[in-house]
Length: 111
Length: 114
Image 1 (cartoon, rainbow over the protein chains, first blue to last red):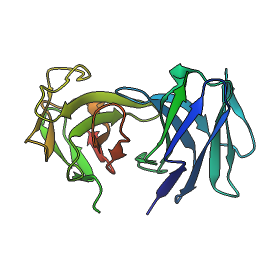
Image 2 (cartoon, rainbow over the protein chains, first blue to last red):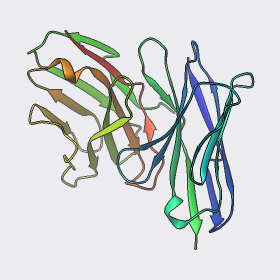
Image 3 (tube, one colour):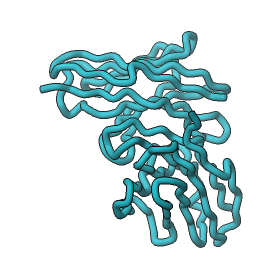
């Protein structure tokens, strides 16, 4: 059974801090790992990682995948209150595309 | 405890037929969400239920889609006169409350319309 585990479950930091969110996985036929930001309704897509060791970057957010150790991290630098959200990690099952999600990390940025 | 369950796991149907997808949320979770995940695309919100409030149907793509929920328990998503573009994985999630509680996702139903 595919498994995705995220840590920490929740995190509260002050504006301007840097945070690192973790995602470890156990899946068969791994192909990619996805990060989502969920504020209200549908999670919004952040990154798709397929290659180990290659950092994906978008503004203050960046993510990297370690396929040997089966984990990924999501970094957010110079956090802002708008970064407050739940960050979801998910892995699609190769073949049927069903996503296995972690339960997410709830990030709260205090002004 | 038991997580969110969905049934069926897979469904293949012919174009034009109606399908019904089921979601059993975690007991005690007041909020329930339906999403759609098309191949190669991100999650697409469809509808959510919160307690006894009127559901937010703003994400339903057409009037062929409808969903019901009985109290704070089982929900069904119905797609009438299915089209090939309805082929996707349909995910259900539940949470203790709306918006700021972690959502626990079910395994999804993979719908294929031929």
